[in-house]
Image (cartoon, rainbow, N blue to C red; front, side, top):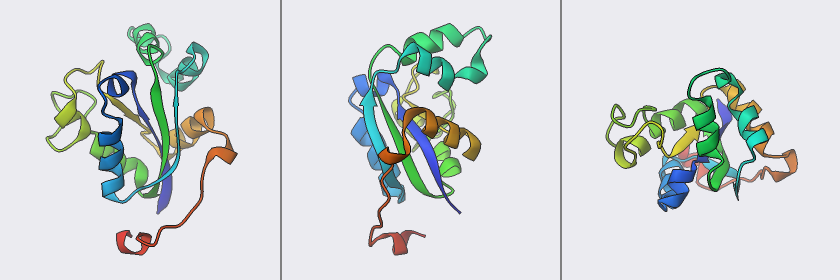
Length: 149
């Protein structure tokens, strides 16, 4: 089933110059980029984005980190995009992430794990709506799509 997923390269990934590497890995898997922008997230938006973590001990540290520098927010489309992109990302704890995943190959610490990806189709819809307006999403077809599905 074709679906959309929200992906964000976090400030540590931008700072380390890994945006292109991360995009390349998702593109090579065959997913189609539907929207992308670089931005510094406001505290208000960060608190909405991480609302499920309100009240947890790490919440303030999470908000401070995600607002500390620019991020690259993206929408990716394709078959089982949410599940597959989560697999490409690897475990939240990079020390437990499999080799070949973004975090397994490039990250070292849980609090600096480079990338965020939606964990469900419902979360993807909510996150996409937080970061993008409908007119920012591009619909297009690629000739290679028939070879990927």
